Image 1 (tube, helix red, strand yellow):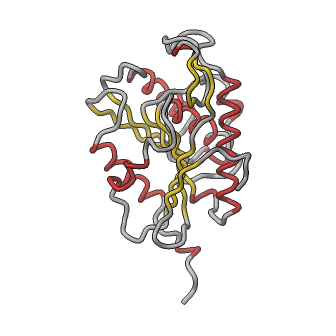
Image 2 (image 1 turned 45 degrees about the vertical axis):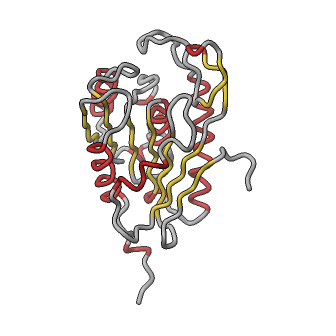
Length: 234
């Protein structure tokens, strides 16, 4: 096992994997967080999607009194609009860690255009940061109940390869942790840069709901439908 890789739960499909979803948890959670969601996605029987659920490194988190917990970056202020609220260096470090998992999937035979980066809250911020800067086209980026940590550098740092990559954003209308207007601001910024963003809001707080999981499942199915080009010739 590569000791440089984050500890990761992997769910293998019944047949050999030909696609992958790397799904990142939120602040203080771990790789187990979204494992129970997979059966509720309604993916087609016999799909070839491998799910990977990594756990972020444990670091002190300022807004939680310096308590050490799994986190993709430090958060210094409860106010999402506060200057220097987020530890951008930590964000970039975590994006590099997730990038190693992405590279390993490619080494294992999953092409980039068959890989989705997904995340909830902090994890969604990392998925957006990495996915839109990655140098090879991905199947999609899924950003749940999240925001852009620092929107300004994206225009200069984004990868042309992922300019057309579909983005799914879902958010709770009553989210007290990441208010929906911050998710909508991320959507508007991405759309202004020409990204294809599918947006859904639900009457919920900082969580996921059954209707949202059904939308996620349909979106993943569309993004990762069987890659006929990779199927063996009869």
